Image (cartoon, rainbow, N blue to C red; front, side, top):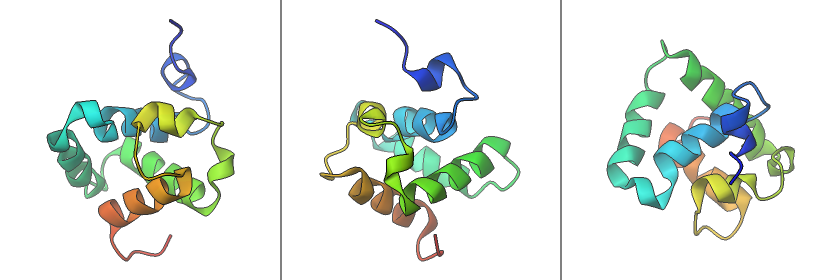
Amino acid sequence: MAKPFWEADPDAPYATLLRHVETYCHPETGSEAYETLKRRTRRADLDDMRVFKEELRRAVRDPAVLPEGALFKAGAFEDGTDQAFLDRLWRDLYGDEPV
């Protein structure tokens, strides 16, 4: 099976967001992984977290920027829509901080 584009090309648009969703948010990774992501988002010194936040911000504003089905493939979420998942993820990670 071919790798998802975000694994095959780490510099592809939204690859950081999708890689982090797959690593930390997929149900098979467990709640400990999600908690690790929450801790990592507080680390301003991590370049990948700055990229992740900016990609997440853009995706929350317009989920259509992501290739169709990519977000669900990465996260296998049960929120119903990409927008609902992205909104919840932003709230969980950044609270009331404006998008």
